[in-house]
Length: 256
Ligand SMILES: Nc1ncnc2c1ncn2[C@@H]1O[C@H](COP(=O)(O)OP(=O)(O)OP(=O)(O)O)[C@@H](O)[C@H]1O
Image 1 (cartoon, rainbow, N blue to C red):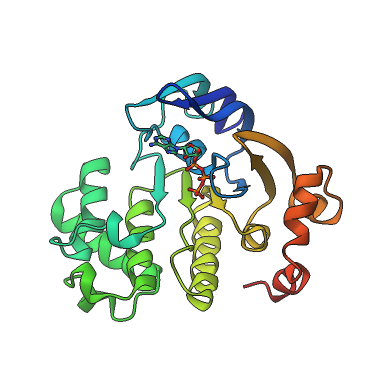
Image 2 (cartoon, protein in one colour):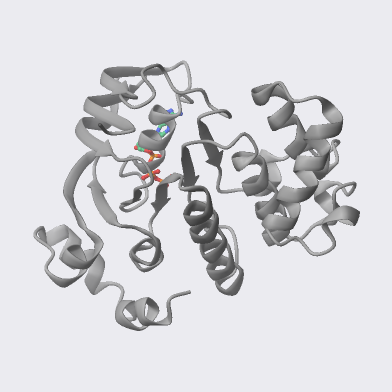
């Protein structure tokens, strides 16, 4: 029984932009799936549809269900969402420790002292230097990579079944990007979470994912196991994306 099941999903913004059309996709518990495609292909729309985070101007066709949960997934509790820009996903006037603690407090009904203790452990798990000290820091005192580590700690604070990372490394430089990918991989492994990794970068995606779904103009053009998709892409579009990544073999070998 899949954790997440998507059937005939379409999303339209306003009257004329069909951002997604006829998407069928299942995600198993603990499975790591990458969604790749160019800008505007509908990747973020898919991630937001799964987490019920679409704006009110969007109309939805089809169904997103959670067979394994047997109910609608709750954002924060069942789904952890990491956005592209950590600066805008964190609140500038709340300490980073309290932002992580609040997720556990709200979603797990955890009392504040226990939630703060958990936040300290999570800041350590995401390898923030001196987590006890940085827990009382504010976002502007951290680097971009450190902010994204905090955002990831907050996303996993309630022990979600699914982690969605929507271009979570795109605003970071290459070295920090590789560190954040390695962090996501470790946390997903340790907690047995499923992962939806949204990226325009097929090499990064291939580093993390069991399967890759390729999107173009709102449609899924190919879905395959990562190794198969890299070795023998079926669609011309996937071949073109791979062709644009001449260093893919090297990047995969490096195992970021
Ligand atoms: N809130 C919105 N209102 C209107 N149109 C939107 C909105 N969000 C996205 N779109 C449009 O929907 C289409 C898909 O956008 P989406 O952001 O899902 O693509 P994407 O593949 O994630 O691209 P990017 O990597 O640039 O974010 C695009 O044509 C985009 O302009």
